[in-house]
Picture 1: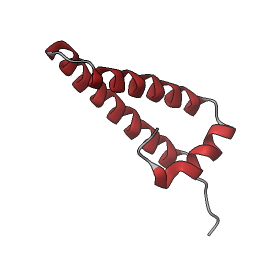
Picture 2: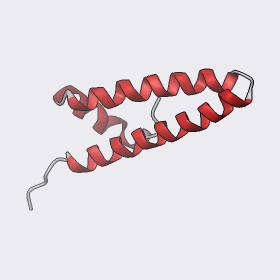
Picture 3: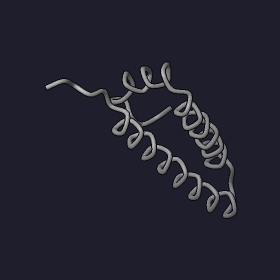
Length: 77
């Protein structure tokens, strides 16, 4: 689950209108599931890989925020 509860409503609207953000959601789900699995697994190799997946999840979260900002509705003045 995304760490972006303040954007949840906006994300639902965007997901209903734009297929492109669905790819980000799927990538985040894959990365976060893998990260959880790696955090449970013992070993230095898994720890290093978990750090890499933490970075991946963070980067996807940043992309989602940027996407929301880029596609925010325009409000007439």
